[in-house]
Length: 618
Image 1 (tube, rainbow, N blue to C red):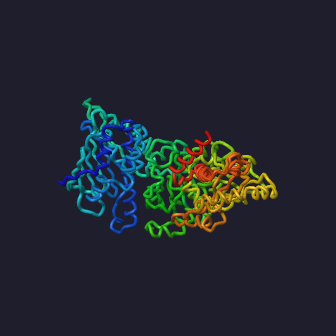
Image 2 (image 1 turned 90 degrees about the horizontal axis):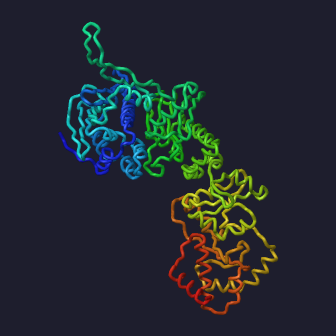
């Protein structure tokens, strides 16, 4: 027998299970059945494709034995089984995103936290909500040695060699005295029906029941066995035979949680390619949505035979939040991961399925769309950048904040209020919604009652939006790189430029290389100055390409624009104090930067200048 230490995170998890999470203990049965089903899925594939196992007389099944005398519940399967290395890897050490993510996302709310258990692949440890010890006896298919994994959840586990005739896994759980409700037949059947009714393999429930002998009139305990689930893969059942409740309970098995989905889609496609899909859109985004090692939520089957749940090519990456099943009638059973990535049949399934999902989202009610937008708007933007085939559909789904209305607006909403002759979609990008909505650059648009889309997810919007170009003939226009609505004639503008030319030249001389140019503007109504990119500079047009390549964007030269009708600028034009003029020039630049959320290069100097000018004003 070899003793091993649990990895640190596993130790934390065991302590949590034992002492904290008591809100929904019944899920330990759901999680262990789900793991057993996965193990049977994996052997079923070998049974059909591997010459070593093809001749074996085998049918997958899960067995749950209840023993009130012993106080134990046992769950067994005849799936692929584990060897010593698998036991250490799967039960003793951290999964790629499992335990650590689970611990990172704990909320302190026992009900919510218990719902996270299965989502991160740590469902096995749910046994410690009802037990102080567990034994796992397992034998891997094709190997001679069986192993026993034992732990009391205190930080160590033992692994020893044992004897087991068949491959598969048996989990022996000694229940605590206050958890004996799970040994009652009616209670366990209720849990199986609730969570695991549509597990594709029979779940046999073994239990003891008292019977009275008619002749002797003596009561004796008799072991009985009955199937506790319908054992029909839900996606293979006709939609007309299923109720909403059936779909919801199956989703809970897939998602390892208790939340209902936002939406589900069940489709059977017949023709040149035949396949069935059952997809769910979760109401809450998966916790690992933005992790590089996110777990795919889609399982691939071929003729009801499980192939993989770890292929991230089954759907576009921006749909990684989806949960569900793809079952193909046309793919070969022995299809490899490499073949899957190049397979034309799977490419057609992916293309058809993606369009169906997006069309469903597009038709969401206002309420559903609000929920969807809150959780997934950012990944939809990823899709706009990645998926040119479905770009129009994605642009109908995406939502943005607006300078004119509260909440999130669609592009169609924006265009319905816009100028159908100019056909321009104006937008501003930054990191802070309030700063953007109060930007001096918006003043002329607000005065002209022109709506501007406020994009405050700078990291994504700066890359994605320039790549859009047009939508339904309307061109996207960045207001920091385009002329503002004009309120004055060409003659009036030229007159102002001439009147203030000496001032703009003098400000440029003070600021030097900090800015490329100083000029008057009619875009401002309330503010004395604003700062914007020089859209004619080659670096400005190259910025998009640098972002595409994931490289640091070179600094783009900035232009300072001043409002010749603002009292501050009018007074500045007549100011003869060189020292004060220099302070005010820098204040004009730095305050314009602050208004746009741009860092001031020398904050101390800015504060000192403000203090000097304020002192003179007082």
